[in-house]
Image (cartoon, rainbow, N blue to C red; front, side, top):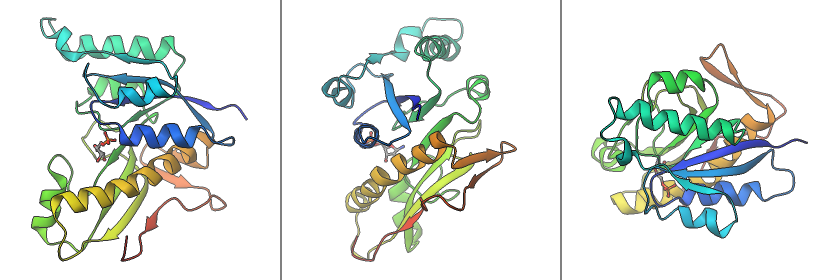
Length: 221
Ligand code: GRF
């Protein structure tokens, strides 16, 4: 089996990156983490790459501040590096910048993202605060293909849990993060192996025979 070459792009802590690295170290995992990129020089998550001997690099978006089009200049460098490293799939993992339509279109169907809500609910920022304020009783996380609209691309998988009456932003964030660490590697594996396929750019179809990747946690999780 040839493993798909994956780049993970982060801005911060990198706990999902760590989970993806861990999964990719298993013998039959269909993807290898070939490159880690951070747009923030001090990102804590870079340490996970260094510890695992995976090439890591920083493309500091601030360096392009004076370019005529800073976003385009940042993305041009990103694109060049991804191609130079023969990257086939890109996983955004806590990457805190919006990618342009041009970039997303040139990587159509090949960029994945994880979001800490059951999309299409609670797109954007401050997800757990908004989740608790809304009073919803079920929360979770979603891995999706990135489209030009923020947090809106075709869904690959979701993991859900019950919101507890005494949940705080911190406790809910923590419990959802634990689900993320299983969901993201499962979704990447499904896409990399071809058991999940993007149909007409609009919806992800899962092979019936594949292991289900969406989960509902037990009430105690
Ligand atoms: C996660 O909650 C993820 O869903 C969101 O950003 C957070 C990143 O956490 N997109 P980490 O850097 O992977 O620990």
